Length: 535
Image 1 (cartoon, rainbow, N blue to C red):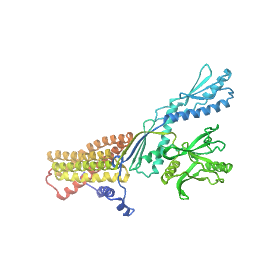
Image 2: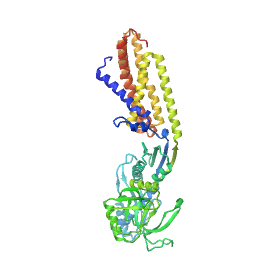
Image 3: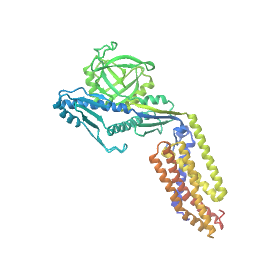
Image 4: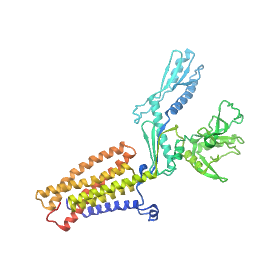
């Protein structure tokens, strides 16, 4: 155990130096780091929300809006199904208490209609997240009066909500990425909730405006035959308003309900300037470009409305056919609102509205206080542990302290290299690791004491101490490592931060206790060749 081959000595030294080198950027400011050569490491530990300050939002997908949309889609499908089945007489399908009802007055057509409606059912795939095994998406029943009732199954509702949450997380991530926030936390919580944490964001109000917008964009023709000020809306059209000041309604427009081109066909949107005014340029995919060209060719001289979330952004007149698949959205934007709209359009539309359940803003001053408190706790822990080790084990305690310092460099170097976010629980994990790092040395030293009491020579005592403590050290760290893995796999946010620092600390403490401390002791004993160990 006391024989150290040259390659192992070189490995221990290189790993220790690497920890120091990757930690050093954390002691330099960004200007100094930028001036260093590119081949040198420049990554710093990212501070989490509780240390750096920022915004915390808890959102909930509007399940009622999703269910309403599902029912409306099923009602439209029901009309087509009954028409194709040859059911000539029926009432208009209507939505009543989260069900769809339609009455078939002719008894001879009821069974045919019932079978056609039953065939509308779709088999759902299993959903492990909701712990469902699939099943049909609707239940169909018919009473003696010929009224057919369609009810959404629980599996269908859960599947739609789960899909909406997944889509919303991806879209929110795209929108947040456009802000340039480092280490954002965007994850599911429970059945229909989404947690969003953005360290360092100084304008949570703007974040809410961008994240919460459904951003359903549509290009629709203006009904020029109707007077928007008369209060009468022709069939197939609806009354929409422009954006006014201070949230008030602006100019009214009568707009056709039919969507000529939807935002789903957009492939890019960028803020730009036209005649000195902020505007948003957009570009369609091939399908959208063809639709846009056809509409503009057929409606030269007529206005068409650009509608975002049932609000008319602008209603320009088509002066000539637009055949390139691109265009400009203008509407009294500022540079920031133009940029925000471009972010929304690039990210895509949310599948359902989001409701804010919780909002917290951590100020940078509070984060700075947390960092200062964490530093004090960590430094106090290191100093007290080092003093205890020196008083208890003398020169061997000093060797353990050297390993402890290298252990801290390895932890911070790993966090910098991995670009992991350090949180308050993460600092707690580091402080815990400080105690764990010397715990292995304590086991080794106590074993060495036992061997000395058994009248073994210093070299034999040290060798036996390391050999007999090795299994205990490995067992203790493996069990702690299993707990850290479970916390990382099943935890979220701060719990994961604690698990990451704890896991890195376990690996680094085993390295410093088993290899580094032993190497230092071997070098010392070979040079001094003590006749007796003062431990």
